Image (cartoon, rainbow, N blue to C red; front, top):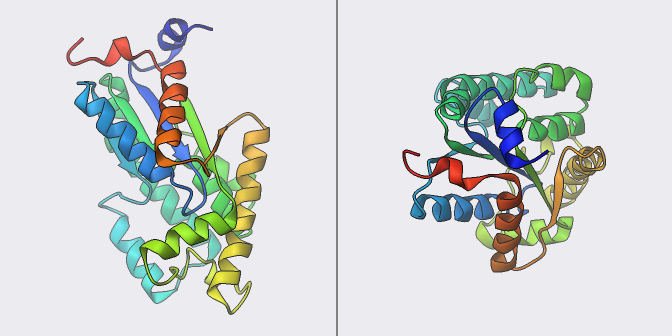
Length: 229
């Protein structure tokens, strides 16, 4: 199916591009660079991040701080956050003809919640309303590389980022490896199913951006999103 045919069969005029990967994979940097490039070229583009709904974010933050979240309440809070952003931001902009770039999407919930013991089928049912991405990239990187990138930017791992709530290990670094390793296995399974396109995230920032743009241009017909066209 051509890009023009894909556009005609979608229920909206815009395009949805999402990035996934474990913490420290470099996906956020690459999406930011893609966003800036599209903005500078004059395209209608919008960037949205995981867990950023004004209605839900403060509740999630307070609950994390108190370490009061069970795996299922964690999952439901993120689903509520996603639903609010989808209704207020993602879908209206897609219908308005924008390119929407999402830093994490429902696959984050599938991978993380599965790593915390939630049934993947139950998690997926909570996101059944989510529009299918036109492009879904998975930035895959070895755990040691991701860990090094994180610790170069700040002195310590975050509690939930390291999966400390799961009791996998009293050592945050070891817990990170065990927890993020579970997440990576879930992402690998989604990639094997053809739901994510894998990018080797050990490349340099420049090389990664070139490959990101190549995937993007193969999936998205940019002629449809220039200015007021």
